[in-house]
Length: 182
Image (cartoon, rainbow, N blue to C red):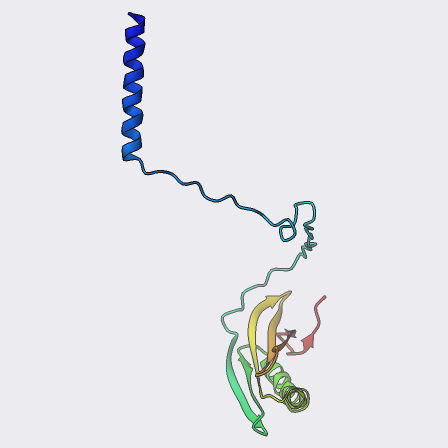
């Protein structure tokens, strides 16, 4: 009796195997991937460089009082069809030292124009290209009770990389004097 039972199980398994072969397409194995040891660096050869992280505590900026306002004035010119420039200067109002701050930026306009005329113009001559110089400001807020303004100048050359410089100025609200904060 056990023999008949085993024979029936064997016949059933054989039928299942045959049915599976008819409905299942043949599986072709993928070719083995051969890694070139010369091009694949080992884990031991890879160096990880850790960059130092420096956390500098900063004084948070205070919002500007509602009476302080500013607008912009733009100075544009062209130097021998090679260097064009456009400087956006701030015009402040609403606080006692506003006129002095405005005079400061009008005085800086000469420095910005000289930068375009001397530095950028001679660089375009050596690179045989043209350049555009732009300058603009952001009013950052108050820091330690003083107005903080950041001015950024970018010289964008048609050949090569652009150059960017930024300076942050602090002004006393009463006198408009440019002061340095430490």
